[in-house]
Every structure is written in C-alpha cells, then in structure tokens.
Amino acid sequence: MSVLRVLDVVAGGQRFAIDIGVVQGIERPRRWARLPFAPPYVLGICEIAGTVVAVVDLAIRLRLPASQGPSAGGVVLLDSAEPIGLAVEEIRGVGELDLSAGIDLGPTGQAAGARGLAADGRILLESEPLVDGRPLTSLREVLGDAWKGAK
View 1: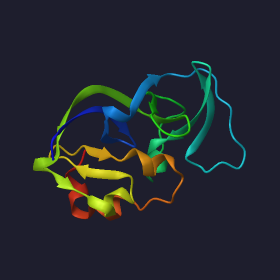
View 2 (view 1 turned 90 degrees about the vertical axis):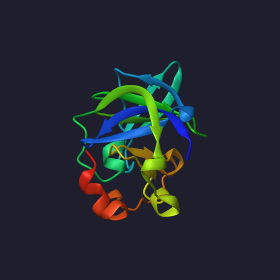
View 3 (view 1 turned 90 degrees about the horizontal axis):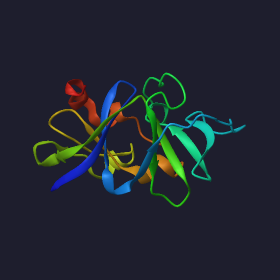
View 4 (view 1 turned 60 degrees about the vertical axis):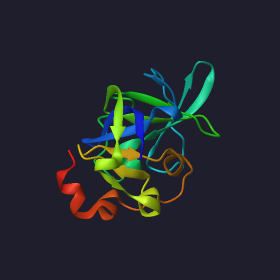
C-alpha cells in the first residue's frame, strides 16, 4: 500500500487516521440542535459556512467510550453525498501513514469502518461506512489481538 497523507485524530482514547482526500475542513461549531429519534451516535446538526451539517460522534459510532461532549476537539468535515462531520476528542494534525508495515483489514475491516491498522497503532478509517448509517461491526471484534498494541 502506498503512503497516504492523513489527518491524525483521537476518538474514544484511540488514535485514528483519516485520508486527507476525504477531509473538507475542520470546524468548532458553537451552536447545536439535537435531532429527535436520531441514532445515539448522531450528536445533532449545526450550521457551518451556511450549510446544515449532521455531526456524528466518531467514538460512539465505533462503539468506543464517548467523547467529552460535542466537538470537544473539533469536527472533521467529510466529502460525502450529504454534509456530515465527525466529532473527535483531539485533532493532532496532518501526517503520513504507510500501511505496508501494518495490517490491511480488507472487507472485514470496512464493515467496521476501518481500512487498516498501522504499525504505530493508528487505525486508518474508511469514511463511507461511517457516514452511510449502516450497522458497523465492532472494531475490537475485527482487530482481535492486534488491538492490544493500539494506543
């Protein structure tokens, strides 16, 4: 696998990487509106640059401990059919990720919203399963023993 430019984030106490090609921006919304009857991982909606955006708590979506509240670290806006953002605990910046020394998770990983596990423990996310509302397999179930080294 080639080297990817990624945005490094933290959610649920775990390090993740998001392919920079699907990131449209980073925001810290000030006002939120809850959505009645929305799944638990949907924090609500907010307005960003004149567009209403649904915001998903990445930790809850991946079945990890919840973040400390709406946009504790920021909201990563993704390129998708509908305006959507991922609320994360921390945004660490842009870097590179080479999965050649890690694990390619294939279709099983995509069912959990992940493409691979890097040698340094970062999990490369697959954005489409995270935003399309499909039920996700648990990351812990997919990663098994490989999860133990991930921090």
